[in-house]
Length: 232
Image (cartoon, rainbow, N blue to C red; front, side):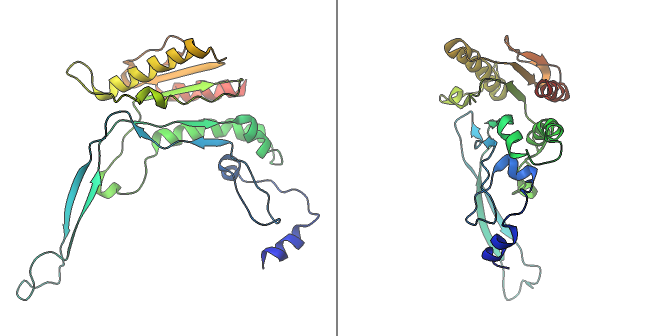
């Protein structure tokens, strides 16, 4: 069936609900058989809070069928560049746009209330799958900051790390990065005075507190508080 056939088949049909993944991340099409969907979620690339120092993993692969008499050495060799950094990742969800995208879905309010906690858990517990057998990069976040706003101005705090953070004898790279993030967010509050409905901070070990926020004891508490905020 061609796109032209699809256009004829759906012409005059009822508006069909879209799936949650499309409601979140959007869809661009070139056929009238489908509708464009503007994304309600934006996700930035993770950036290092410190100066990136690249390292190289040199590897060889052996051929089990080489008898060692006629051929010697490895079957192949190569190298992979990598780094070990503290990362800041930012995401924004427009819940009004998400509701608009899901307006033809059954009970969209309940779906959105389930989506927000699921997104938080996914971002905290999921790591990129590439090269995991080589590097086993299974790390949990050291801090999570959530802001709930009625005033639609999303704010990334990436500029907190324009000047790289360095670990010292007194404070680690991670603790210094979290401290920089909190201080930059507080300074942004003072500079712009943007309306803020609620703010929640979870910092592993409770090492960092924030004045204009509820400091959660653990990550599940942050997820629960955020879900309650969007349910209001």
